[in-house]
Amino acid sequence: RQRLLSAKLRLPGFSDPWKELKINKITIIRKGEQVNKDVLFSNAKYPVINGGITPSGYLDIYNTKANTITISEGGNSCGYVNFMTTPFWSGGHCYTIEAKDGINNLFIYQLLKNNEKYIMSLRVGSGLPNIQIKDLGNLKFMIPTYQEQTAIAEVLTASDREIELAKEKLERLRRQKRGLMQQLLTGKKRVKY
Image 1 (cartoon, rainbow, N blue to C red):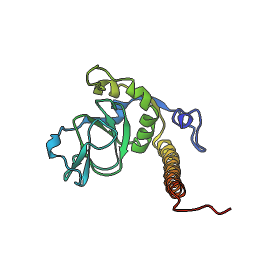
Image 2: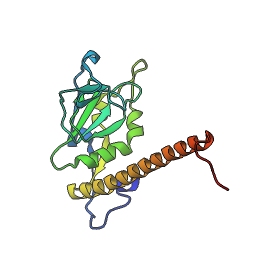
Image 3: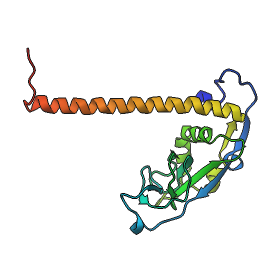
Image 4: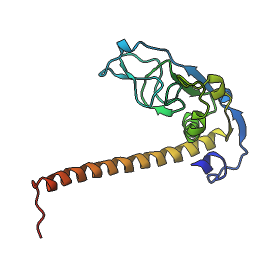
């Protein structure tokens, strides 16, 4: 991942030089809109992304389209990078990032996710830590041509999916083991010698 995103490893067929660009020159960064927690539901359709790793709740309306990058703006998880594949409500402690023309959104997500620890180090403030939009916008990265961005994003997205499937399989096996252990340890199931 790191080697692909830094041009240390190039995919076959690509040799054009990469350009160093600031994130605010190749994306649009927006801060979300705060909603009162009293209006959040647990069973509505659209998640509210608001400064954390998991949704703060759900609403029946959304303010951001699917396939958008989010970065947690404030709180203990500030700097957390996510890619929302469904429409959602971007809350007051959430930045949304949308690639401009000629920039692949999934490539930018992979680039930001790969640099998540550094983004988290940008936090300021002691009471409620947060990341300033100007600091986020001033991040500089080496950016390849659109075609190479797309190829890299496809390789890394496929790799992420394989990892996710392996994690799901591991969790299923863990649940199966727990159930079997429960049956064995309570005598419901006996081992034959």
